[in-house]
Length: 397
Ligand SMILES: O=P(O)(O)OC[C@H]1O[C@](O)(CO)[C@@H](O)[C@@H]1O
Image 1: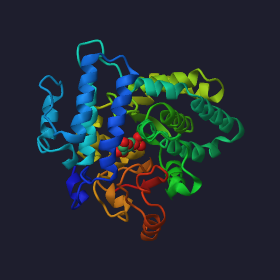
Image 2 (image 1 turned 90 degrees about the horizontal axis):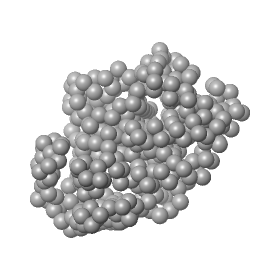
Image 3 (image 1 turned 120 degrees about the vertical axis):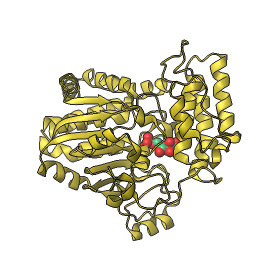
Image 4 (image 1 turned 180 degrees about the vertical axis):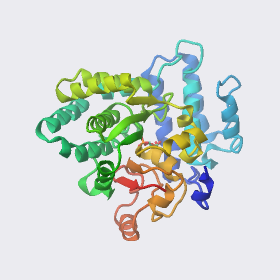
């Protein structure tokens, strides 16, 4: 596949090096605070706590070290770390630095070690609270009302919107910001290609849909309900749900989180319960396939995925990329002109693609110049504030 040639000349990567910038604040405020929360959320012993503290100090004032000698994925990380070892964390590309940070955080908590914390999700306590929360009850009650009072044909736009809105509820964002989450306001939707996405699905032969998931719990539930709808209405012959093979970026969904979310549905009653049972059956029948390739925890862009996976994605009738991190990996975490056409940015992927994203970091493409001007003027910090969102659709590159 000739991916590289479709990308053109890459602009400068987004770095962590400018005090006051968003990436800087993530490494100097958000992640030190996250470490404190993780440290207190589980019963980590002195050694794990010391390692977490050390990581907290390193990211603020230390240099990037190589992967530890015993890491099972050391060879890959040696390669990925090679350009950065010995530099201060601030000098590294934001996307790379965040990925390495989360890999080191798992190492610090003993996630891969032989001891008692093996396989214990450091973010599990936060995810569980969210899944059990009253806000999740409200979400499922709203779903039950939607299904009870709306015809099947009219449900798709609401489910798409709900899946987008749910990206606002990102634990990483909320944990550190300390603010209650709420949906982006009506005016926050900068690009709305929702109707075009649904037209595409209704007017083309149903095929395999790929959904690259983002967060667990309150984001994953609407994603699952959307998947159920697509399968039930025959808008997809099957759905592949890509999640992370290990805990990542705080709230990112893992297979365990998918099972927990389906159980939450089956335990709720009403249409949500029925949807949960259908999803369970779809998993058993293979119409819903759960995938978690290691690639999804690599510090790479999506076009760098293994060639077989890339070829597989190219056969999808639609690729749905959820959330901010997946957007950065989809279009590239670079200082693109915000007016760069989306279709051009995703030209490396020869399948229709839709990004459902609340903006929580600097990269953005596909806006018109007037919108960019007015946002720059009237809404300082609009790229990272989590108050703007997009449904951005591109038909084949
Ligand atoms: O859950 P989402 O929508 O991918 O957002 C995660 C975002 O949080 C950050 O990691 C910052 O904490 C962003 O850099 C990242 O893109």
